[in-house]
Length: 407
Image (cartoon, rainbow, N blue to C red; front, side, top):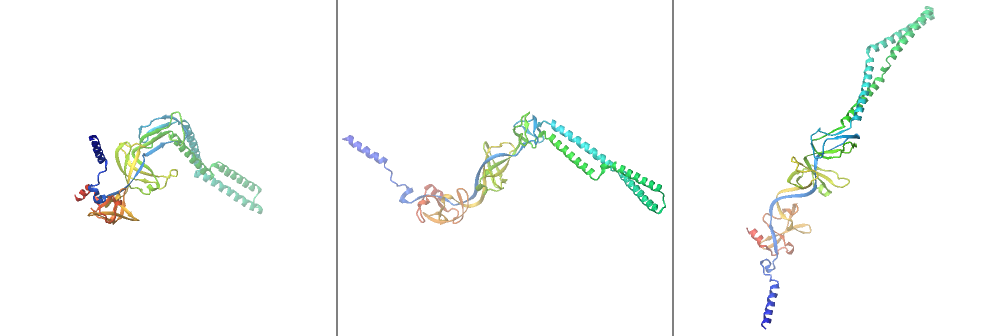
């Protein structure tokens, strides 16, 4: 019998222990909704957007040749530091040198011909031709006079023969002098001058080809990659190597149409790079006006100084761009805002009651809004629990928040 009584008592105690406790806490006393609140305050608002991209050297120059030549010697390797003008690759110059010598010889021959032609065109020789022309004209005039006199019977036939011989002799003299200067026709010297100019151009081109067999560094920097192989062929327009300057690096981003509409040159940006502890501050320098036709994305760049070479080309870059900012603004958390159709409102805790208060919003970032009208500093507003209350309802703030308010 005692065992049964003890068992019954144990069962009652067990049921009592498992039963839910009676709701008698202060938070839910009299069924008053418990809400979380916050004080309205002034703060600086900053609107940011995050970009993801890659670090790129600000200068990277491919080394190419315009002529297909054999590679004689590669003077550098990947990672080498070079100065502007340092010899990087030597190409076979034998054929180019031969062409240069031939071009120089041709130019020398034409220059000699031009000088000889110019030397023949002297004022004395021109005067000799003019004198011969005058003598011929005088002889012809004399012959005409003799013919007139012969018709009148005043001269003999021997006089006419003598005059004819003089005319023939003077004609021969004039022809000889003219033939001796056949190279001085008006068209000849301009043609020689043109050939001389073309020959000089050929020499200049040949000199460029010879010079192009010695490929030098166009900038000071580091050798990033090398594809040239000794005794191989240097194909035109195919980079033999690349020289980069990493003293300055561009954080380069590809952004979509929505993002690019928010960005402009001059925007402040905070930059971080994978593997680098230092944070960098910069400004956007470039926002591409057109999208890449293949990707539909826009290129955005922000430069940084990289004197210590901490940032390497290809490192992942993350940028936080300041889109807009506002100082000393009256701000509230976005969690406090509700909407009645298009009208924003909050609940102000006035005493023990929640008062529905329309507000006008302004600038916003991710989790805060500027209040242009409707609130003042130190107003207490409901941030959580607003869905269970209506205008004029009595509410109870959580104890810790109430203590903060009273303090």
